[in-house]
Length: 116
Image (cartoon, rainbow, N blue to C red; front, top):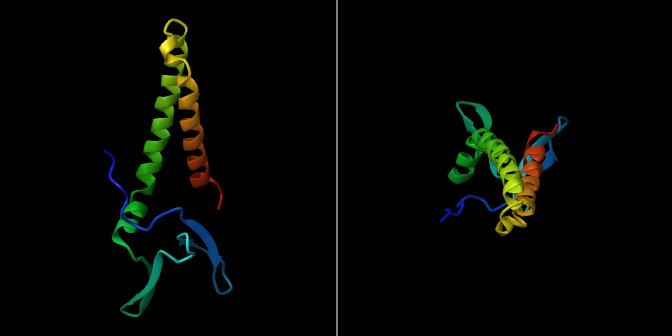
């Protein structure tokens, strides 16, 4: 059973903000920033307010890499299912199911890797 994410519910979106220089600010559904400004020894910086959100952000690169690997695996599986479907009708429709998942994965990868 998959564990439920305990951080700020998604989807998160990026809003433009700034005083002269536009920055992207991740916000939740209610347009509340998941970041806060903190000051330490006279230096201001952004910090993630929720520990679960911080873990998710820190894991983002690894999650993206794993998602790309899952897509490659599903692509290979699709080829095997196409071959198996010729002799085993029980696989009928599975290629389409996998393609739907691949399309969703590709959309996430594209949204993550496109020019901001």
